[in-house]
Amino acid sequence: MEASVASTGSGLRCSPNPMPKQQHERRSGRPIRMLTPMRRWGRGRRGGEARGVGVERKRLVVFVSGGGSNFRAIHDAALGGDVNGVVVALVTDKPGCGGAEHARGNGIPVVVFPKLKSAPEGVSTDELLNGLRELRVDFILLAGYLKLIPVELVQAYPKSILNIHPSLLPAFGGKGYYGLKVHKAVIASGARYSGPTVHFVDEHYDTGRTLAQRVVPVQANDTPEQLATRVLHEEHQVYVEAVTALCEDRIVWREDGIPLIRSQTNPDEYT
Image (tube, rainbow, N blue to C red):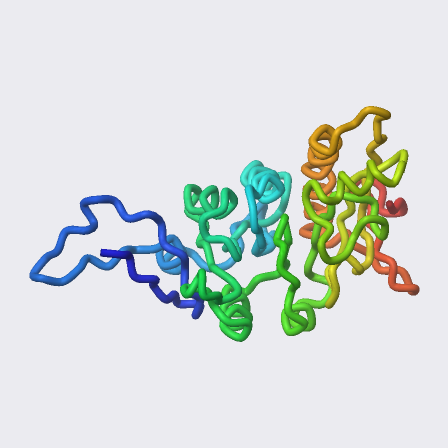
């Protein structure tokens, strides 16, 4: 028997965990209904958990397509109190990916989007939007999610969706530039520097306003894998720092539409 995909109070269907053997047993000829992480969360406390008196944590949803190392870095920082936020759901187009497995293992609901023949449990754009609204999501964080974000989602969350890209945008960005493809292109171009970019998301691939970057020198004999390892190390740091600023309302927009991060220690300093 395959586990049914349960609907949730938020209107989102959650990708189920693998079902333990004992849950396949039947009682009175009826299958036992599996309790998904989303359903368990929905019965718990709603609203952000307080970091301090009168301070509500921001509600975050992370989108992944792969191993989700940036998702793990953000989740760990939130658990440790460095990020004033809580991950309330994970969205993926690949329900079997490492990021989704990590979420399930930590009790974070996993929602499949978009709905595909290979993922019939997926939700539509309207269902996703309705679910995010009911979850009262503050910010959406893309962490290796390879699908283009629907314009409806971008319009519903203006200046509230971040992505991280493994190059110094606008160089080596756009459709088809992801993973090792980026690092191969950087090395082939002869560029002396690379590094991650955190940017806000618009209707296109990798064209939103840059929020933060880290510079990583390209070594003379670098392989794509070696460069990727060093860039990824910086990704984990700069993304957590950007999300920390986002959750502390320290993003300031200049009159020309450029986002800046206000310093934690000196409100007159920006990066």
